[in-house]
Length: 326
Ligand SMILES: Cc1cc2nc3c(=O)[nH]c(=O)nc-3n(C[C@H](O)[C@H](O)[C@H](O)COP(=O)(O)O)c2cc1C
Image (cartoon, rainbow, N blue to C red; front, top):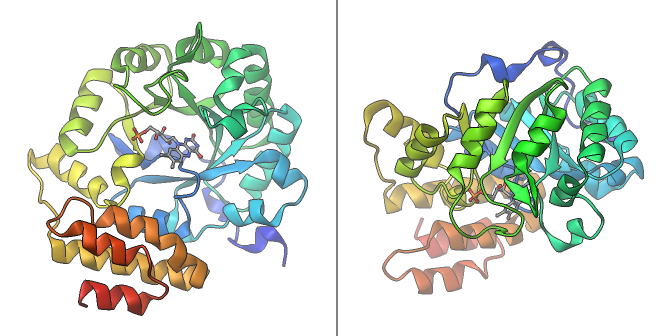
């Protein structure tokens, strides 16, 4: 089987800019390496995400035919619209990889200009690319020229003296459909407040869809982020770890000004649903990978420490059922 037989290309969804057809504000699952596998994306979709991003996928890995890299591209139609995020630093490999993303029927392709992880930074990828705006331009141009599906990019507010706005202005004549702005600089990494003014300036400078990202953990913070940046939508990352229903709560809050908290019984149900799906998709590995999710689901309850100690040792879905008393 070719790696690209995983999802049959949905030809009809091609040649369309799905971003412009979505109801605003658009609430998306931001890319997260090591987290956004099929099970988590399906769960986020079920609990209200309008769009889901994949984990970042290496353009070099695709070029050299790495099985692990192809595995990251696998998705189910239930997850659509899905955006596959690419990282790398060679424009010609972005073009080849983007074509593969289009071929498997994904709805959009995203370029990673934001990752600060040392192993990515060291190989001149992720946020480090923002130091070389000419190279960023070549990467975006090569990607846009290679495909008909919408191209988006994920950026930070800056690195050193280069701002996110500099990058947006540099590539603004290219047909980019959407930009997710992580409101923190490279220097801030994942700490500190998001710079809402910087996101707002990018929203004012760019005609396409702008998604604001960084530090959204509650529906109230989501509403404030949208109001203060004027963005077309938001990207959620750490806020949905152990809380995929946050998408739904945000939508409820934006519509009615209030939202329901999930009860302990509901959380147990979602955690088990997640574990069963992960087991179905990945077998035993899926359960081992579930351990971190289980610790997130059951954080902050009375007696949670004991519960979590047991949950991080589970080996089967049944172990989880027994511990949760299901
Ligand atoms: C575990 C983890 C993995 C991440 N992986 C990626 C990634 O693959 N690509 C990317 O562009 N950003 C990645 N990010 C950054 C998030 O998409 C997001 O920009 C960042 O966490 C800020 O949002 P938050 O404050 O809501 O978490 C990752 C973040 C986390 C916590």
